[in-house]
Image (cartoon, rainbow, N blue to C red; front, side, top):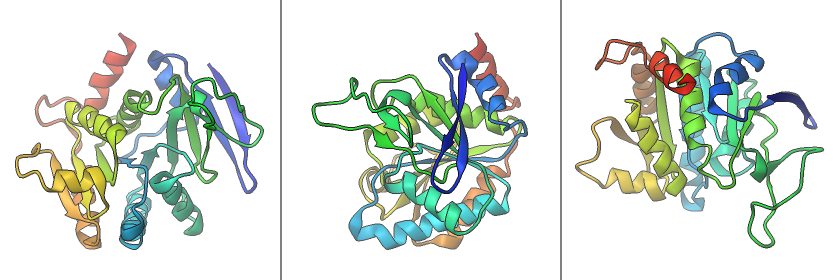
Length: 253
């Protein structure tokens, strides 16, 4: 497993390239993230133009809550939509919470990085990494969505005996996969309605999974309260065993 410093215009960040999920614990240690943290998994890609202001305020709220709770945010890390906004807000406010990107290596690039597009369609280019993330985990995969299991497991390993929560803003089919994996882990999901697409679809489903909480994106105080409540739970209530231990055993097997 290799590591590399990425030099952006205004900062440098450490990047790891695990080849197997069995390397993930080591990869996280290589990043220097040896503590255990409350973790927010932030998913979603586009920002709906008609909902841009309320969406950005919601991301501001999520960022401030992470900073106040000494939490880690795990996200996709590309310079687009929700993934870009969280990085920019972290930088603009001088926040110090770790912001960890998990994304397929073959589909992204960075200053001095690769430009081969063999996994992409005709005329497509690699996505740029967002320059304000603190850590990057670039994983195997030829399409977006291949990183989903890695992202879920990264959050679980980082949280260990703390809790984690997934937050959906807008979102499409990759986010749907992320949510399914989170629910399989017993991880609660907060869907911010009025941000478009999948988040609004979930808001319209009266019989959705009980682990999914829908909150309007403009209900900023409520967003903070629900995140705080979710991250205050330390143990998987169904088994009495920290979720991270279960996942780490599965990853290593």
